[in-house]
Image (cartoon, rainbow, N blue to C red; front, side, top):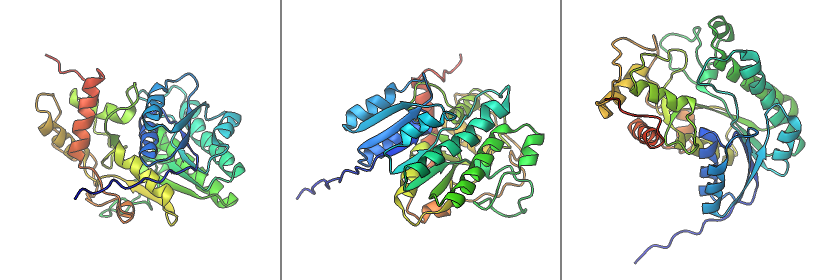
Length: 332
């Protein structure tokens, strides 16, 4: 006797995804479509490519409305959020190269852009905002107690980062703090997720910063990522976690999203074993001095039912995608 496919009930509540054509944003759109969301407002940076989002919508027969909106353009952001019940705020500058003007290129768009999104959410009575923060808002934190596993109670040390010109953690930390302050003052429901280094197939045409970490490692990079590493996670799991947090009424506060905490050197070792033909550097010392390993660091998400994809699968799927898109070539 064959089992019947369960009928999937459409979810008519429109939601908005900012930065929807980026690596993570694209996966969130795809995951929402797979979960039967019927209307998605997708914001993209003016002039950027969104054809892959249009293709996703065509195959699902849902409606994806593209809005060109700079984060600092409050009017454009407001138009994108109008009519939506929920918002996934993903957009935030993240560069492959060091910024020339970090305040203008990273900090202002992250902080003021987040506040523009929250102002719009307040204006249109949005039910919940899921904020994509980052492990960069948790670490580096030199004052964290020795022998303790890093968890959601940790906040990045801003003075430490500024003194070392680590501007991305500064931008993500200030944006998240501004978001929770705004939420408290205005009675807005905001939940934050903190993904570790995200890997997986690239849905977008360009190379993103997290997948570039694997690309560079496969090409022989000796960078330890000491300031920006807690572990890794499949981008599919991050997208699923975002939808889970949006759909779980009891969800609140901050949620670390990583398939365990461990040294970058351990990650490099996994990559080397999977791809012995590439010149992956072998790290002989701790790449993150004092970091305490933990297999189930994302306990808050695990307790909500999230099951993480093995890191090896994320590595393989990313590497094959990088090859397919011409970002990774084995040199003779």
